[in-house]
Amino acid sequence: MCLARHGAQVVCLDNDPAALRYIQAEAQLPANPSIAGLLTAIKLDLHPDSWPYEPDTVGAIVSVDFAFHQFLNSFVATLKSGGYLLLESIGGHGGNYLSLPEPGFVKAVLAESVDFRYFEERRVGPSNNRRATTKLLAVKRNST
Image (cartoon, rainbow, N blue to C red; front, side, top):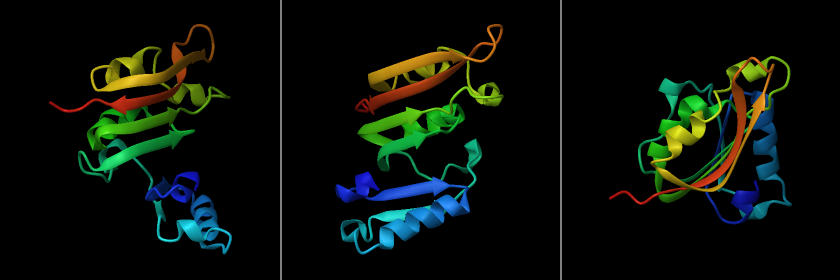
């Protein structure tokens, strides 16, 4: 909602109906008139083959608390040149570290397409398991 308050058109994708209802309710509150028409909530259970956006159509992608590594190529393709990518993977709590990629994977996939403004990777899980969480802010390079 913060981005919508600053005038950005925002589309929230989630498969949790309660989260989407909350977003829609907040957007309709009288205290939030500046985001009317700027915030759209869509129920979508994402899979790599279900990414709904065409190449070079989005100015920014924000993904938080999501195992996004399967979508990296789709995210980059969707971004316009100069578009921002703000990502934070799921944490390494419980057994969910098994859904995370190996250290270095995210940086390797993105390295030729973006300029990193911030990048943090942290190993998680048992010491014999090679998995890592990632936080990053990057800008898509101009296509030439």
